[in-house]
Amino acid sequence: MQSLLDPAVLFFALGAFAGLVRSNLEMPAAISKFLSIYLLTALGLKGGFALAASGFTASVASSLGLAVLLAVVVPLAGYALLRRVLSGFNAAAVAATYGSVSAVTFVTATQYLESQSISYGGYMAAAMALMESPAILLAVMLANALRQRQAVPAAHAAPVMAVSPSGTAALAGPGGLGAAGPTPAGKGGPALSVGKILRESFTDGTQLLLLGAMLIGLVTGEAGKAAMQPFSGDLFKGMLCLFLLDMGLSAARNLPAVRKQSPWLLAYAVWGPLVHASVAVSLAWLAQVPAGDAVLLMVLAASASYIAVPAVVRYAIPEADPSLYVSLSLGVTFPLNILLGIPLYTQVVLQLWGG
Image (cartoon, rainbow, N blue to C red; front, side, top):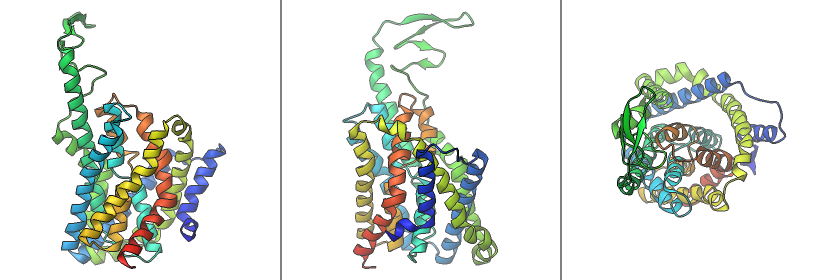
């Protein structure tokens, strides 16, 4: 119960209440963007300062290695399960959403650990960055494989002559060749190379800011930490509260879309993250990573992306329904992790690690 009285959690609940009663309370878009930039910058700096103090140890390598492993296992397992109740494209999109991570959930978890005096490695911010791209890559590869399988029978269909606005005639339709080559059956999507996806992932503003701030913290070390304490330390809690107020509003206003989802998908949005967190804590226990790192691995595995993945998937897998993966991650999984998941994962680790 004490964990629910954390100011950050209470501000999230306030935002959710305001959204549910249809209050005119809202956060201007520019302020929301500023808060997001601030939190990522402060988180990156904290991670860099911590890594400068500890160095790259075996414990660091274990935590980062487990993060990458989870980033591959979770979306593949999720896709195999979701394929039973969804189309291939929707299953790939939802699996990518739940295989990637939520930066806000992670930031909230770090603040909760600090309030409980539980130490963790600042380098876990790098783990968060590493876990974002693999799920997107796997989802795009799965979608491309589905398109190829659909295109095989379609290739034998009779082509249709189409005339472009400029008057140029070309074979179009299933198996036809237009200016862009073969068109797959269905709605289709752009062919994205692995290199392009990786480049867009790591040059994305969120990733670039987080990793850049971490590098600055690593280079400046203890002197930089002392100089930036008023910015990255003293202001952090208040900024997080304001951001979670905005996220509470967004989650509440997303509830109408949640109500339209099937019970099976709602069950996945609730139980899937718990299973992912269980896998994470099992691997962390086997590798004997520090308790704080284990909690954050559970949080990362249990979280779902509602910003980075939807932005890429909307373009890379246009056959998938955006209201499906956005409503589940933002309307169900995110509030559950903020309100109940983080304290639950912390207690599980403390019991297992004997803290």
